[in-house]
Image 1 (tube, protein in one colour):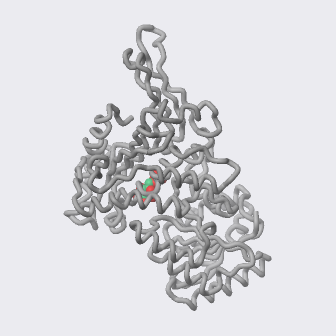
Image 2 (image 1 turned 60 degrees about the horizontal axis):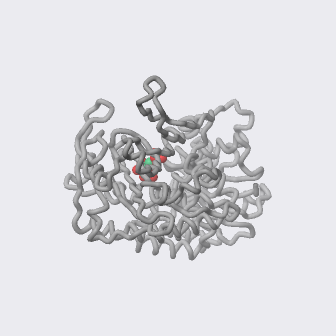
Image 3 (image 1 turned 90 degrees about the vertical axis):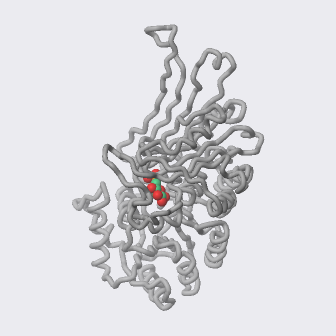
Length: 480
Ligand code: BG6
């Protein structure tokens, strides 16, 4: 791997502590970092390199499962870290940062390959990117890359505006947009499952699939993030990005595996074939919900409107269920149901492919075959088939053929994604074409919410509003 400078904006923030330092350490232990690498952290306050290293060390003790001070090379790991105080709005600070980066690049013989990670509030994305350009940090003899994480705008217009500004400083191919769902092992495995097993491709279409269900339910509520969540809601927080990414991977046409760009094109194409839902029709296909009081793990919990920082009359959606159609040769007529919600009965992220039954199977009352891809917290693939109950052969039994991930160390999303970005592999990052197409689809839904939103209340700890079950019943299906 090529030597590089990893410039981390927001190095004293929460994401760095919880996810990025542990991921870097794990990559270090697995010898997946370049031989020569420096990490230059920036943050508001002054700190010496030693203080910053103590901060990194402390973060690892708190958040890393692998921290082991006895590791003989632990000091080598910490020595990569340097610090530069920086006010994101102050151009002079970027010049100081450039000098520091250049100084360490010379010291370690790093040929100006620079990866900029913006672990900061999204309102600073464009400011920082433009300062990187102006200060000359982006004029490298080697490569440069930019990593950012959602939200990329809060609607179609703001997303476009942000992107235009980012493009003044970075080419599209240099921008790595993290969607942490794309770093999950089973999500990455979806391509292998679909394209590495020749039994699936002949079945992966409207002739054989009755419907597809994509679910991401959570037990937690808004978790002290009311400020952010009040402006976001489930549609922006989960649906526009994570769930539409899963949808694209399930529904896209087979990619040319050897061509990295192809996956992005195929994903964008499937969104282009997604039947738009106009705002007048939104209520027919989309159910918005909000959790009320209820019970979670045997404890009484408050409703969304009672959460600290939430408007007592808030109309923010904490649940969404949607029915989508893809108007192309592969999928026409097959409903894709997508649901996500906070404060539901269980934490579960999964994709279910429900297969069609023959007329005979229907007559005999056999349940459908299901392919279930569990993404989290379990990582498993199971196939549900019907079998004779061997004790009572007149009875049909549903049995699961199951493969469960057994590896001792399942890599975390950030480890995979950082490693890919270090190598310059953008397969599991979101490209602008996909992000823009996702916003285009979501924009009329945002408009419908702004105007006249039916918001169904559901008790905390439940399976969400009844209306979401009715959505599937209308088509003769049910959530699995
Ligand atoms: C984040 C959302 O992107 O994903 C959170 O902002 C949500 O609201 C989280 O809780 C869910 O991620 P995971 O990996 O726990 O399913």
